[in-house]
Image (tube, rainbow, N blue to C red; front, side):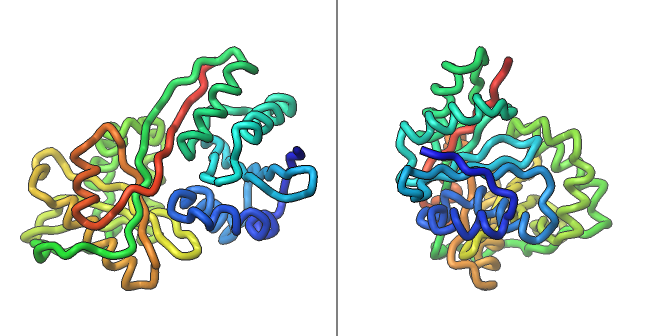
Length: 281
């Protein structure tokens, strides 16, 4: 096997895109990153592909520092392929702070990496990858969804801080102000209002060739257990489908049975599982 390094996002996407699109919903992170990179000047992105002796591409992996290496869901990703990837990253002395992606591939990489480096592997989250192509019928929403505005920034900042704490993504707190400003500027975050009061939020994340990803679902404690998050996600999902997305995808914390049941009510079905691991020297 041979590992090839790429510098052109366009050429890399052309090469690995067909591989990733076979499981588009599960690979929304890899595809979304590549889509975003084509919209701007790529900075510091690592793009690798793995090929058999006959030149056939069987796997891809990428990283946008300081984030983790992304291991996609690819049928041809045998244990041997993943071990070869670990060997290459080790020999080339790449920084590997952790990995995120399809559960079996990630676990295989973690096992291989621990044999090569004296590191501890700490699991950060077990996630379910859910996809929806058709909404289930639900009761009429009690409120309305609107885009977040600059005037919302101050109080919305508090919501995002709490959201990152609840989802165990505290590393995001360092740049939370910039994140909120960017989401508002790019019209990604929506506020769900009931009776003129803001009760929940939801965001549109990355796009793939045929779909869109939903994330950032949060309801303050004082408004929880009222079904507001369900209605907010339902409304945004409907909007994305009406705008042309063939499907919507989202991630759930598999240890949170409540959130998983919420998305199932809307029509989301589990398409795969994802693991997030951090390596500690």
